[in-house]
Length: 480
Image 1 (cartoon, helix red, strand yellow):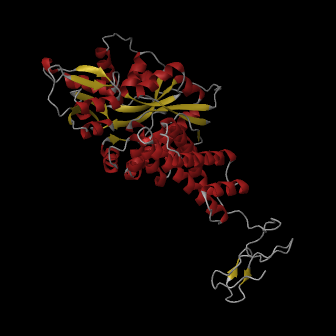
Image 2 (tube, rainbow, N blue to C red; image 1 turned 180 degrees about the vertical axis):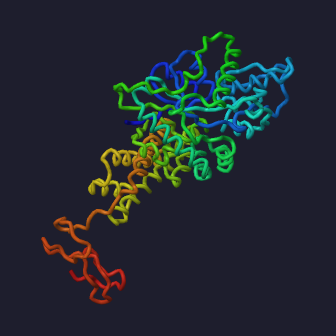
Image 3 (cartoon, one colour; image 1 turned 90 degrees about the vertical axis):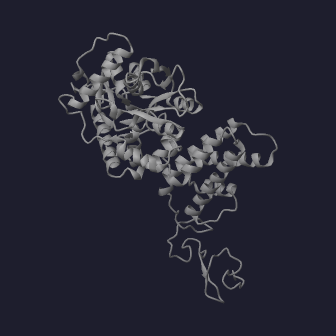
């Protein structure tokens, strides 16, 4: 079965995608899960993603409060839930009005002074604090715990049960890694969730801000008591917030029950994730190949640029992240930086596969094409980047950001390919320079045409290549 990750703007968006059948399984907070349940979706809990420990919070602006205070959050989210409980602790005349904004918009509006409060989750709580805010209320001030979940549809449970079991196993394996060594993943997750927060802060969040699960719910007969209490509390709050009477089914319907397998018409399992640390186990499982270890082949899917960059080796992550940030501000600099990266990749690759020192990027690409050491489309892309860089270097016109974006997309494809392939690149067999017969390394002459492969300098005894005209050690002319 193939696994196709699908990025969503939020857990709520992932839940809504269950309506259309666009997703089989997704990470989501308590609120999207509860709302799906209240809306009558056949939604099931595959497992607990994590539980909050001061990682869900209300942050107050450092600026003076308005007469009519405003609070930004995502309506229908866990931020909405905690802000409702927080508001009830305030005097009536100080209770805020809610503004429905994305997490990124909330942080920006808090920074500019347009909001008095935001109610968010990590990493946005840390970003709001960095923007000058102060945490005034957290999940630890609630009288119930707040969980995030891996949720699936009943149809997926019936048609793709073994694959969902594999997802659950990979998730728990990744959680175990986060529990044992959160620092190993802090820098990489910083690339995913935002570089405005430093790696040490991410390590602390992974270690102290969340409790990671150690058991799954696939084989449970009922909901754990703390999970049931949490879901009941969240459902009660949303019923109040929406001023709607929902016909609430028993919560035990959320327990995953396998009722028999039917043949799936799809060979792809669609997994939804969003820009929240609740999804950290997805990224760790992806980096560490845990999905593959449990029998799932990961496709590219619809990933964000930041997620694609974070999957690459550390030596290129920062350069690509910086180029992505500079696309609209300095497209010419981006093209120059990407052009240099392109040249370095293919020069190094030629050195590795042939031992040759290329004279130029164009020569390296052409030699690799002759050696068939890279796919034709990769080499065509490399040629395009090289040509665009040359044009950008020698023309006076201002470059279009769209052209820089195109070069960035091409280079990201190239780097992803190179990152996968570079460890497997091997030096081709030694060949006769005249008849191209494959030779053993120890042979000094070709057995087919008699051409020597090396010889000794008559003056100093150093080893010579037959193509050399003089000995590099002593300067004596080579006798053919």
